[in-house]
Length: 164
Length: 374
Picture 1 (cartoon, rainbow over the protein chains, first blue to last red):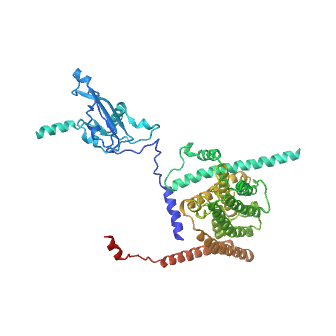
Picture 2 (tube, rainbow over the protein chains, first blue to last red):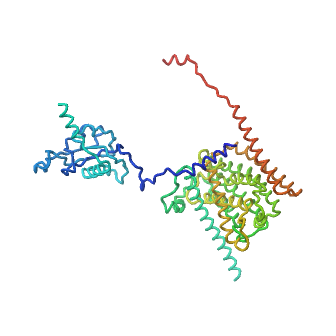
């Protein structure tokens, strides 16, 4: 019997608390900086070209075969602006298939692919989750701006020099 | 000519009442969803309109636009009449419920009797709906509704009778005017509690919603109904909820009266006072809904017959003594509260005792069977 009154008090006290709701499409929960979302391609803003050379190592290691890449000769290398002889021509990741395992990131020799904060899969058409090169780079630039991402290659190179 | 004007007046009054009640029902749906949301630390409807205010309108449009499915084994005539048999009594009650001094469609001297008589009629509709649906859940729900409503009608009427004895009238206007010096909730806290609980059972709100219980009889008498016909049941349920809240306010909480409010302003300000009080009672009903789980049917019956009926008779006898011997009002309220507290104490003591009767038996399987498995 006393429990009834206690129950009423419990609901009253929860009623006075603030709702924990985020009004989702309008209002997003803040993402942690180390959140691991879908892989996207990074943009080298010094030379203004993608880091990716289209070497297909990520494509070969991908357990779900959700990506494809095509390589081409780098026109900027011919001009002498860039050190990269080859550059990515087209790249596609099907986020509907991606399992966010992060193997592509571990395997990449150029720090070209990175786990971003992208995590929303809801689209109006089935194939809208297939992201092409421009969209991947755009997402990558957003990620770089958000987190102040820097390539690790320099550190790797210096480490390699020190060991050898 | 005067006849036409008269009839026109009446029709417009009834249409106005219907519109007003529909608006009230829409507001109740919104208030309920918001309030339950807040109890569960959610926000409730937020998308349709500012703060989700247009959500009930969207719901209503959806309900009316839905296909009205009909099972081929249904008893058609009874099936179509049943929603009306539930809705019309709940609507008719409002003819004599005043919302302020002299603001009432028809002021009846037997108003309370009329209300009680009409509110019982909705049982017929529920049983008919259950029977006509040719569905076992519907029949079961209809019978449950009948059992519940009939057994809780007695304490409801008895609690109302106590008020009628105090006011020496069945006229709702008169009863409210009698509460000029003190409201009857102070004199009869016991009666208020009995009326409120029995009223909750009468309208089938949550601790007593065993006839439309979704997890047991999947909606009870309303299983087969869909679309607009279902929405009529829904409308009737919310109108009944509002009626019970309004009756609680009129009979026990002083209606449109407020301390310090007097003179000519009472009629106009009284409307707001009445609605404010009624919505407060409604909020308490929703609060109960957000708190309590549903009673089992045997618990419901034993609570009705073993607790509420004897308590309501005690209430009547107490009121009779009060009237006959001319006790002071404070003595009456003290006795009423004492009975309330002692019953509360006795029941909680009994519940604590029954808890000790349970013993836990731990079953240990024979080890020989396990050996063979290896």
